[in-house]
Length: 295
Image 1: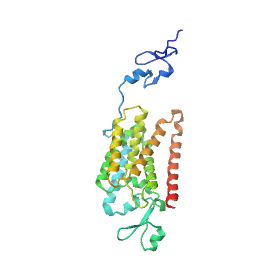
Image 2 (image 1 turned 135 degrees about the vertical axis):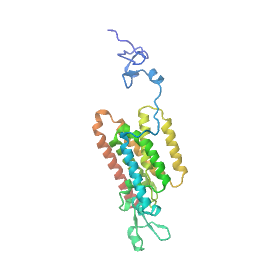
Image 3 (image 1 turned 90 degrees about the vertical axis):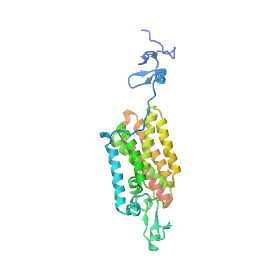
Image 4 (image 1 turned 30 degrees about the vertical axis):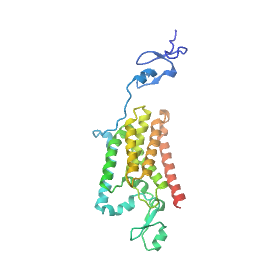
């Protein structure tokens, strides 16, 4: 039987037809669609899908996002009830890369725990001096009402959408991993005595996840790029905002989402071992930074 030639490459046989225009196409011209294959012209002429950022009605698959919001609110209420800005919880939960020795007049003496004790003062530990839990606990800590309000609004917009696409376990892994990478960059670049807190590092990770999804689906990027641009401008225009945490969280979200989104289906069983390996590498980086920078 005669095999028709590709309408774009007359010298090549075509055994597949475009599902839209039914013209014969060769393997080089086939574009995988949700149903069958399509030719490049039909794909180009089709309306481009848009990844929209919008609030949605609460769905069962948003449970993890709701729980994370509830934990953040519970920690904020605990801070509020234990002295607010003077709460001891801030010292314990906020991320301080090295630690500091607070004096009575408010100055910070950068010294060792032993040197602080010799001066009759109480050392406030940081990650490098034993408070290792701060790399995650700081992601659930807020003090100012506007801070938790804006962060939880952003989480409630982004979280359910990413969670619905990836499932609860993967979404939680993305959120926590982004928090860890945010803390890693803070450990590497922020002042050793400076306290960093807030969920925005993990939230920037969700923005990175949304960007990866948009790229994979070849969707319109304008919405997510505008969102990222506004938040990046906010990061550098507003005083006392941790650009290190925001950038670290964004990079972490891109990395973990790219692993989950682009891993070939036959190798999906390697997804969690590879995610665990990435986590171990990030934790090793935090330990290494602590030793090299503050050891």
